[in-house]
Image (cartoon, rainbow, N blue to C red; front, side, top):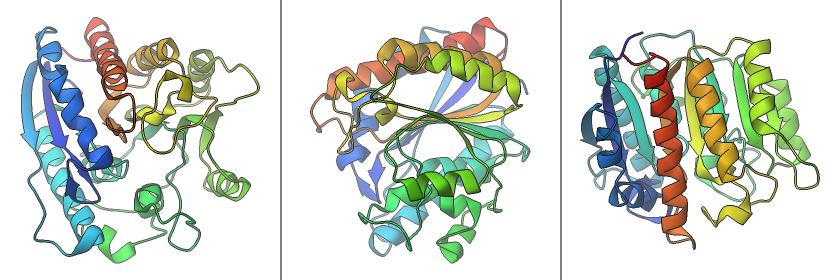
Amino acid sequence: MVFNKKVSVIFSPYHLGHRDYRVGNGPNRIKKLGILDELKTLKLDIELVEIERVDEFEGEIGMSFEILRRISKVVAKCVSEDRFPLVLAGNCMSTIAIACAMRERDFGFVYFDAHDDFESPDDNENGYFDAMGLSMLHGDSWKYHTSTIPGYKPLSYDRFLYVGLRDQSSAQRQNVINAGMDFILGSSTEKVDFNLELKQKLKEKNYSPALVHLDLDVLDESCGKVNDYPSAGGLFEDELFACMKTVSLSARPLSLTVCSFDPNAGDGDKIASIGIKAIMTFFETLIDNSNIE
């Protein structure tokens, strides 16, 4: 697929439907620190599309699913116009809306995240709704509401790769294994060469074309506090940039989502700057290797 240097930046600054709240404020900080101007230096045709408020919908569940419906519609439109979707979102579950919108249905996932996002209401322990997105897309939870997302069909996860996964219980890990998902685990006790392992995984199995998901809490907690769920054993800055280059080069990306960053958690400008550099590395590599022409 040729994207002709056209990129739609889809701006969704919401956490559970609340605008500019907690991780919903992350897109604002990334925008404030200049991501749009940075992308324009690459001579990309940048279109900014903002998801409008959903205050009229009922509660956090109703508002959250309306956000997903709107993201799906916007992404479907930009894909139909051969524009590459870059989604700056509060919530991780935004990626399921992107999956629903894809014209090409045979795709994989490369999913940078400390958490699996594969919980359901029956096993979720902390009440964090955004921990359930991948179980929705798999057809395991919130079935009626998920069915209202345009383009939704339950997906299998036989071409799904986590990078940096680590903050899980043993039961959560087993659910991931049972679903056929693969992973590169983070570790607080052993050194992991994330980029080397990513290259090996992408050689061993075809994940292309891929939806690329970057939850910034994949970063090691020593890089700064990304949100309220930091953990050791993640990627350091240079490792993240190297992995962004590898996935851009080797996984034929269909989209990029950057999410789950709360600038008020403690290290807002630092984490936003890391996020911007990761995005720029991703697009520079696409251009250099003619995946965008």
